[in-house]
Image (cartoon, rainbow, N blue to C red):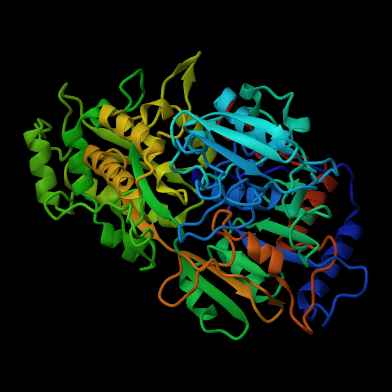
Length: 630
């Protein structure tokens, strides 16, 4: 799932002791650097051209079978190529296939079950070895055979992929596959992944830099909670990028990131503070965009029918519906998101697809609209009463109801939402214990096991994510088979499962849209995964120093053509096209932000006084290893 959810890691260690005088000298150098003028008009010969992008959350893992945050997908799109890749507006980006197979060009069989795909010849991996049809077949069969759930939505319906010759593969499907040429799957090198078991691949495998793919850039260095450095791929088959390196810098504070953008230390920033966004709009120095590319902010409740540590009241449909009625979505947009967004309804965003439109919107009669009195009446009718008048209702065993409400610490907007929701739910008589927790801690509670038994240990969580370009790859998140994986509410519905099996192979697009709309309706009525808002992400980038920023032409607001980066991997063209503007400077080799330099000095100082701190916060406990460090 392409999540915005992030995990924070802190590793403080060093191997040398610096004298106090040396530290003072470093401090003086930093002070001089702070007051120095911007980079010279053009980079001296031999210096690397670096593009520096700031964001406020680490990619969770650079193993494509584990990582699922949006920032991870941004890196995956530069590290790997896909056989096919599609965007919601019908356009598509770089692909290894020479052309898309159709029945008209003979690439798809008359019965729609077999696709023959020619791939580009003479493509090389980033280690110089040839990429062949064998690697493409391996990448698909690896997911199918090992059930690597990060990508099973893309391979659904495919039985096998066979090698025809070094530049041709044959994709065999059980039935016609509706999303065959819109399912993006990273093509990985068989000579690296071939000896990695499926369990290890999606649980513990650490593909250490330099990571090998075939995309335009290669991950060559990773420092947890600090940066990911990618170098241009000299073997790239497509247009040669101008920049030598792309550095993604992680900031713990969005205000600090914004100030470094204004100072010219970084060239672009994602999720800048909403209060400061207006200062870069209509600017001669910066481009900016408020955008939503398939993103939605949501709440999920623990409905697991098996062994669970969640509050059992959440298995009651009427109880969940009452909680839904006690959420003012417009207020969430106005207060938590500063008006930058729209109230949410379902997991398939509105105003995204046309001919057909896959979005389903509840009618006024069906909508679980904000109504505290109706929420109270629903709870009363369902048997949840406040028998002692203390303001907190009891469950059917007589125990006061108290829900744990969590959200990750790296989202101030979600924290504001939780405070509002806590107030509304308290007003209808529900006890709430709200906490902002590290995302790794939340993941550990979600993937909680007792021995080999899955025992989810949470009640209600608030988070933000984004769906796939093909809506038929988003709706499978909630099938029964995805419990313990993508199915966050741990919810099951037979009709939903059957409809998903149908939509995967329905080639008639209007009919497929009806199936996907009905699936949204079922999920909405189950009230276990209420979509709260469709928030806008805010980005800004320096147009005085750089040219070639390439908008997505999708997801922007008003006349804005859309984001130029930060859209979970849809913006490969920007990284290929961007280049220093005439008369503008480019970053020097190895240069990092002032924040990063200060961290290094603090580490050195700590070592200098004999303190070595080694603190690693891992995500998902033993199930998923964290982002690796070089």
